[in-house]
Every structure is written in C-alpha cells, then in structure tokens.
Amino acid sequence: MDVEVGSNLYRNTDGTIEVEGIPQIQIALKPATGALLVNFALFDANGKVTAKLNDSTLMINEKRAYEVSRTPKSLLLTHLASEAVILKMELKTPDLVAFTKGSFHTIKGHLFEVSPTEWKIDKLRATGTTQDLKGGSVVLG
Image (cartoon, rainbow, N blue to C red; front, side, top):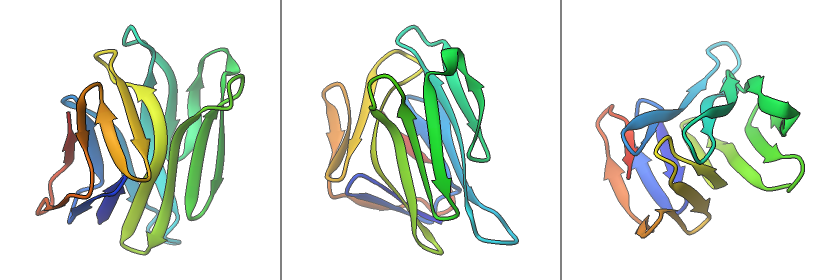
C-alpha cells in the first residue's frame, strides 16, 4: 500500500505510520469490500490517550470531545468544540491512501501537523519527498 502524508509519498508500506518512534496510525483495507480502516491513538500534551479509533470506530472518546465521519473511502476525525480536524484520510486509488490534513500531539507531547503540502513536528518538516519503504513502516520524526 502507498501512503501520502501531506505532499510526501511513501511507496510499498505495511500501512503503519510511526510518529516519534510509536506506531500511532495503522491503515488497512477491509478484505471483502476494500473499505478504508484506520486504527489511531490520540494523545493529549501529557501523553495520555484521549481518543482511540479501532477499524475506523471510536472506541475511546474522553468527554465525548471527538466525532468521526466516515465513508468506505474516507475518514474524518474532528474535535467537536473547536471543529479542528484531527485526522483526515481518503482512499485515492485501491492502493493509495492520502493523509491530507490533521493536527494532534505525539506521545512525547509534540504537535504533529499535516497539510496538503507538508508534515511537521516542531521544526522538523518534510515536503514533496518520495520513498520506497519495501514493506516497512512510514517513520516520521
């Protein structure tokens, strides 16, 4: 599976996105239908889990602060009070998932941001790169 994070293309991944050494996002396709399935752990600035997606369904939703909208080809996780986009993903082709927008804390408390043009963690950023991961994980940070 190929994964875009902002404008960065990661080819031949296993569907895992590691952020600062922790597998924070897992992407898969449902075998029978090809629907997008996302596993994701959302942390606060202190490293505490505040929300968790399992197969694109909210399993943990502290204070009911988050909402997930999904179709077979897309997922949008938002913070209800601020309307901030936490995670926006879409299946562009049967083999390409695009992570086009998002903003959340890593387990280490750093702010991770994705826009259509880049991803960044504090001063570390990447834009317009292409890597063949040969079946490995996307490693950011």
